[in-house]
Every structure is written in structure tokens, then in C-alpha cells.
Image 1: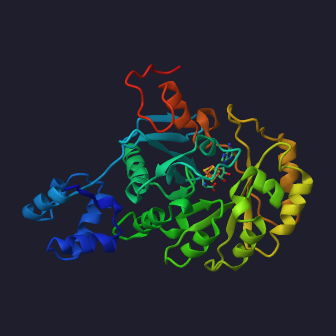
Image 2: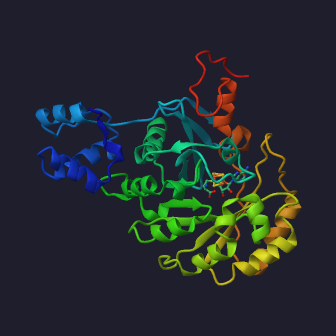
Image 3: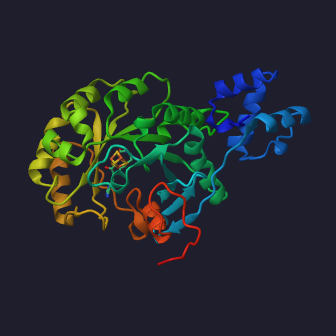
Length: 361
Ligand code: SAH
Ligand code: SF4
């Protein structure tokens, strides 16, 4: 019989699981605390659980974990972790220290199906969804690797489209927020999506909390659907219409992410249009100058152009943080570290790394 991974369970599911083994519900909460708060990976260490039940657990269940294959740290303190998944696939997470906070950017899929033209992850295609355990384990593994430092914020902004892996992502957020799990406040969890409309609407009925970021990247349907094929299925106008009626918590705003690409979406006209179409939506606009990748023809605009774009929005009264590019030195945009390591090892996407890693170069 295959042993179940306890990290794929929410608290309710774990309680039901221990009951199915003849134990009382609180055992499930005890186990959760061991896993998420103590970082225990072995049932033997769960000292407040009887020997017999520990033995039984070992027969039917296991606790999964991730271990980084590579960690790259850039001079600005950003670290990128590459995690092998055991089936030949791998995912990455990025740890970003800033202003007393420690934000971890995690992945939700191996690759991505959305195929955004400017994105390396999109270019590499899709291998599979991550399980809830694999999503949460990125946080546990980075916490272990960084020792005593506390991860204060989590952003679902690494590889993959979170709403395209709906069930597992919702489960993972439940575990992150659970007081017996990671105990993170929903205000410190940000989910970034291209805007899959049915899932976007549905996730607001799950009773979980998170901050919503939407990758907009264009202010008109033509440009957006050229950059992001998903916009053909879910047009910009419908996306913005849904944004107007999402039941956001009081005082909460949607963050629209806008990657600025030279000559594509970075003109003053684009900025003016953006300012117009966002009118009436409680939001801020996060400007991200494009991170160039050798595989793709897109270029980052000159700083003056970025500032001119920002100025239009500021003058219209928007909050417009300009995201400085962190970790550029190490391979900043999503998918790049993984691409690099795989290349180094001479192995294509989705197949196991070569048996003869040749080292750097
Ligand atoms: N799939 C989700 C979350 C992961 S992508 C989404 O698209 O929202 C996270 C962000 O990285 C997106 O806003 C995307 O537009 C941005 N991004 C992708 N490639 C980039 C690049 N080369 N330079 C700058 N930002 C990029
Ligand atoms: Fe996928 Fe996001 Fe990249 Fe688009 S930008 S391909 S949705 S990871």
C-alpha cells in the first residue's frame, strides 16, 4: 500500500485521517504542530504521541520534505533555491530580504501552461502541478536552510499559475494560515495570477485570506492577448469587470503587476490608457522593468521611460511602486535558475538530471 503524504492534508483532513486510524482528532493537531512548527520529519520525534500509534503512522503515512540542490545568493542578499522533486522535475523559490521583512516567493507548478510570451517559465512549457505538500515544503525547506530567520511573507509568484492548480493551492494556503500549521496571517500571503476568471471568483468563497496580485502587463486587449494568450479566453474587459466586484476585505487593494517591456507596452499613451481602465478599482500598480533573458527578444525600457510611465499614473492619483529588480545578478526572472542548472547538466525539461554533472560552465 502506498503511504500517504501527511503534508497533503489540511487540518480537517488530517483529523479525519487519524480518526480513521482509531485515534481522536486532537492527535491530528498535535502532528500538525510537529510538522509545521517544529519542522519534524520523523514520527519518532513526536514524543507526545504513543509508541504504538507512531509505529502505525509509519506504516501508513510519511512526511515529505525538500532539499535544495542549488542555492545562489546575489550581493543584494536575494537567494534562489532549486529543489529537485524526486521524479526528475524541479522547482525554485526565491528568498528576498527587504526592510526588516523576509519574503519567500514560491512556485505552484513545474512550468506553466499559460505561455506568456515574455516569460521564461512560459517558454519552457508545463510538466505538472505541485502537490499542496510540495508547495508548503518550499517554505519549510527554506526556513530550515536559513536557520533562525523568520520568513514573514509568502508570495505565490514563482513558477506556475496558482489558479491553474486550484485545489492544491487552496489547501496549501489553508495550511499556511492554520494556527496549528504555519500560522501565517493572510495579509502576509500574496497570490499572483493572470486572472483565470472562474477560479478567481471562486477563491473568494473559500474562506481563506490572501492579498491578490493580478499580472496585467497591458492596458488594451490587443497588446495583452499578444503577450498573454490567456487574454483571448478571458478578455481584459471581463477581467477588470470582475475586479470591480470582487469582495475584497475592507481597506484591501488589488495589486496590478505591470511588466514594462521596451516598445511593447511602455509608452506614455499606454500609461494614460492604464490609468483610464483602472478607474474605480481599489488598487495599486506595481511597475516591474522587464528582466531580460537571453532566450527572448524583449528588452527592458530605459530608466527615463520607466519614470515617465510612472509619472502619468502618479499624477492620476495611483500608488505606483517601482519594483527594483532584486537578484538580477543571479538570474532573477522566474524560471531562470532552473533553466540554468538544467542546461549545465545537459538535460532538457522534465527529464532527470544527467548522471554526470559537469559542474559550473
Ligand atoms: N503565473 C503568475 C505568477 C508567477 S509569474 C502570474 O503570472 O501572475 C510572476 C510575475 O513575474 C508575473 O507578474 C509576470 O508578469 C512576471 N514576469 C515573468 N517574466 C518576467 C521577466 N522576464 N521580467 C519581469 N517580470 C517577469
Ligand atoms: Fe505562467 Fe506567470 Fe509566466 Fe505567464 S507570467 S507564463 S502565467 S508563470
